[in-house]
Image (cartoon, rainbow, N blue to C red; front, side, top):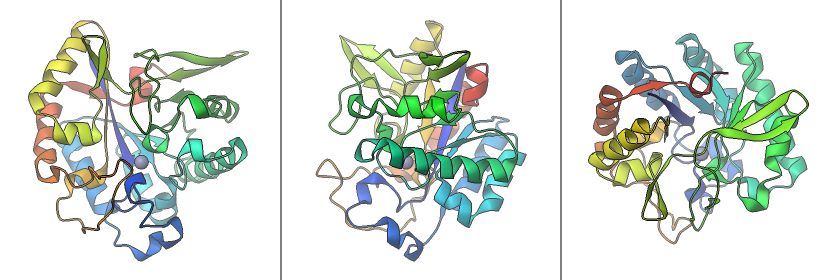
Amino acid sequence: MINAISIDVEDWYQVSDFESVVQFSRWDDFESRVVRNTRRILELLGRHSIHGTFFILTWNAERFPELVKEIDAAGHEIATHGYAHRLVYTQTPEEFRSDLQRSLNILQDLTGKPVLGYRAPSFSITKDSIWALDVLLELGLRYDSSIFPLRDKLYGIADSYRFPYVVRQQGSQDLIEFPMSTVRVRQTNLPLAGGAYFRLLPYAFFRWGMNKLNREGKSTVLYLHPWEIDPEQPRIAARGKRGYSSHYWNLRATENKLVRLLQDFSFAPMREVLAL
Ligand SMILES: [Zn+2]
């Protein structure tokens, strides 16, 4: 079984958890570590001959166009994480469309290739913002990977289908949803997807969960951020969206865990797993 591996290319200060203390208008004031950290991930993937999908937060692509070209030239898929990291359910459809169009224009100009995939900031396609799928279809995207089929305070559609499926169709055009991976234990979907879950939960849980799904003939999707393998990143105090922030949890252990995963499983870009 081949699993999808995806990197949401954003910098350490651009995360939703820091929104209240790091305004978008001040992003240029913070120390940028995204190029360095993304290159480290490229190195780790390269060492294992693995290609993945890089969902680029496109504000960064404007500042570091060479990084996008480098990722593309190394054979990875370039996809979009939007332009400004605004949660989808805080935007109007018009604002969402213009943020996404801006991102697509920049990325497609840089690589000369169509962008097929989208991942929302903090999985913010929920029942309240489900209209976003129609906008993705309208702008020519082929897949979305933003819906988390679980119940969480900040995101998730708990009763959503857990594996890739056609979520929208118009004429001959399809939009596929590749939901964030979960493993079902006693009627509950537990997150198997990556990020803070990957940093916090023991590696054995991931290995068990991915093996279980792979044995059932299902591909999983893993997501990571470049800042998650950077224990030296600056510290700022933020209350986080849950009243606490998971941002700095276990940063030191993540790279080794990632390497184990790269050794133990087969991975490919999202577009390849979805046969697009
Ligand atoms: Zn993000």
